[in-house]
Image (tube, rainbow, N blue to C red; front, side, top):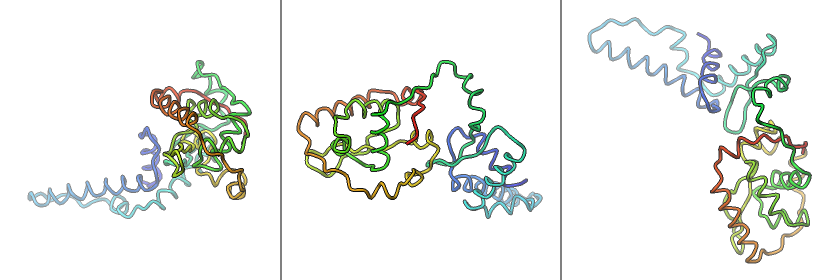
Length: 243
């Protein structure tokens, strides 16, 4: 039994993405389980057959070997013109339908209508993506206008999340992108964004100190996120413009 086929079975069975480390651990756990059964049967006086060579060899499975197995699977999918591929996201590997078939798959979900983000929302999302973690005041210093509604819209669509508080006067909230953001744009990290290293080094306008009303607004944003089920946010389909 080939490692690539075993990896494929794990990805199909799992509802969540799996990292290379987790897949390697699961394979080794199966070998350890078989070895424990063999030892127990021997101690009980039985004469069990030794483990098959292919199973014993899997005891040496590493994350690197799991990644190689995925590359082998993707190569097979491509050459056999399959409708799916395996992609890595920040939280692991997962099987996805190829974008070429998106127009057909979309008809499985007639209730989901793609909604394009507005220009101001995309500008706000880009600032968060490139300069995260970032405060609302810093975002507004770049855009030059209030961003309360734009941040709330991005929070509602699960593209941005609250990632703690800054060590600044008033302890303003910090905003980060979500796993949904990475999955939607098909990237694994911020470094995959265009000109990421250059734009992250670019000096931004200095943010003004936030007054009490702004702190109250941030508290309202926090309460809004807490009161909104994550599933409802993730169900909204967004088709944003390219960054």
